[in-house]
Image (cartoon, rainbow, N blue to C red; front, side, top):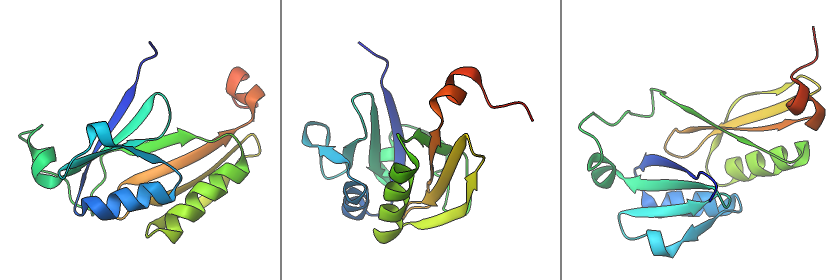
Length: 138
């Protein structure tokens, strides 16, 4: 079995978060969802667990960061620049906000957004040859 990634995020409004991620084209796995958490299926190996604050607090003794702080940037690959645009545009349309200007390095293209709870996401397309060989020499 391939290694799976589970990104756990505290959210203020579970239903809003579920609707937001579904608007990006992801599904909710009902087998791992209830009234305190939802499993957002991004791919066969990546899931985002959106958890109410009380549920998230069950897994840590630390304070939950507020929307004015950042501890992690979630970056996912996209198959094309068009997919980057589709996802980020859908995120903005579903209540997210574009976080930074697009970055186009020719061999790599990226856009980012904040979800309704302030979690930062980046979607990146990289030329396959650059992905294999590394970025071109400057």
